[in-house]
Length: 127
Image (cartoon, rainbow, N blue to C red):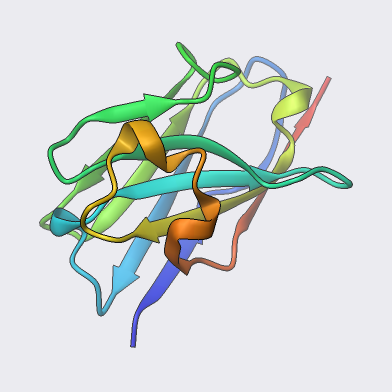
């Protein structure tokens, strides 16, 4: 059974950094497109960053230059390094696994194409 388990969330002040991790069980990262989505209170879930099996990445405009997605295939772990955090980054962050054919450039707009979701990790940024 596939499980995605996020960690690394927390509360930091604006301008700070956090690194989120997503460990996969029963799932091989190397062959699939993976992504991070987030959902703030009273808002729709939005794509934040994605990385596909070729290592190509894609980011939401709101996080470009501040967030970096990466993966360690040997550890079956996905990461999201978040720097220069802003209060508007406050949200629940979810790890997502897509089908093998998904490309990073498409993934952020396709939450309905996610095969597996993690349960989320909360990020709170204070001003």
